[in-house]
Length: 328
Image (cartoon, rainbow, N blue to C red):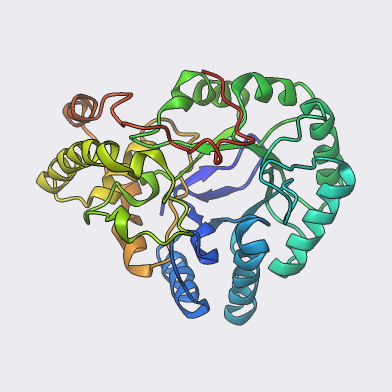
């Protein structure tokens, strides 16, 4: 697996990381055994960078990762997130130093480590200026609990304000062939500031794969159930484009998932995508995406069949949009 640098001063990590939200059942039932098998497959593929959060199952994802590391005697480079008040109504966030420190300490305990390589503010607390939050994070970094810090789902303007206080190692936002908003300033701002840009959901929450999804089979607790892009006419329209992507990929001997991840890698050397899965078989579909090299003709064809804005429907429902900083 090729390597990329996690921010200006950060360590080198695998060019593709593993998003671990699925370990907490956000997309369907899973188990400790299957999660362990997925982590085994990631390690064997050369993936050494995991992304998790306090929110994922109220610490369940972190607990599974910690148990795997203890049992296997191996150590991933880990990014985790906090700042959302667990058990409170959606949109209740707390970025105070007291809350962030308590969240970090809980994460470290569940992960079984004394520090993590990267810590994100999962969602902004609008009552506290981002400069003040950055001061808090820099103090915690100096204390040695975190190697670096970043923010999730912020705007380029907020990134620049934070970076005026201290180096922001990474920004995490949804970015894929069907979600292109970061092209309107965030990818460029990260490159300018030496900040890694970490695309989550580079597989479009599972739609950019070789198997048709069936939204009617989604459980009520599935994160995609209320998502506009998976409903009715929107979903039918979107699948037409996905099938064109599949044909493009298969003509070249690539899986659709690997092609989608490779596309994010191709958008800049500072991008580190973190596709998520709860299946070792699905992980193997895209783990070799760093070896795909697009020709100019390939790039032109992808731009033709999947132009910016092709996806029908918003990327989140109104309820899911709470706390997201929108800038366009």
